[in-house]
Image (tube, rainbow, N blue to C red; front, side, top):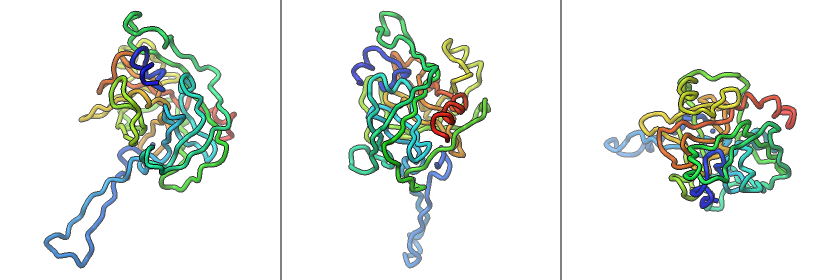
Length: 280
């Protein structure tokens, strides 16, 4: 899968969030009252990433996904291009340690307007910078319910607003690679982003369409981005509201670079379709 990515692809074919970003992501622990006064102090302990983004999961081993009910997951349509999406793994911070809950996928329903660019073409030969996808949504119905516990597994609230304010703090969590052409990571990581001005995104990305896309960029000082395997991960705001699904990235046919514009499929644009299919 990742080899394919290093040869041809973009995050648009990436296979290649309800504590929210920055909200309630630390716990404060105080030393026992009988400890000597000179060492009595507050120690800040970070919550595991999966508790900060308890709606996030691994979809089919090559993508991220978002829990929207005990039996439904929302991910990216292009995640079916390289994986059948036969299972999900939820409620874990590490995909290799045996923790978490696995559920088989009963059926997949792709958005009827989903389209994606010519990902099979060589990026260098055809001067391809990024392969954009539109209406990049996929619903996965699970064979049996996930045991939502309010801590490590939570259903995300779905956004229904047609637009997002410029500068809105958002974030996502996933298992994607940390460099172009790399391998999926076993540890869940989080990325902190902000919604970008429409004119910036339209100028930099001719393929950008605000009707069904949300354009974000990493916040300083890290200027996070996205890379192979982050596709399908859910973008949430600081209230835990699901606003986007990871789709493609600026120049992702050639690199995964910090500071790049990242495009998520706009959840509100697919809200009625989600309701019709799932009754959510």
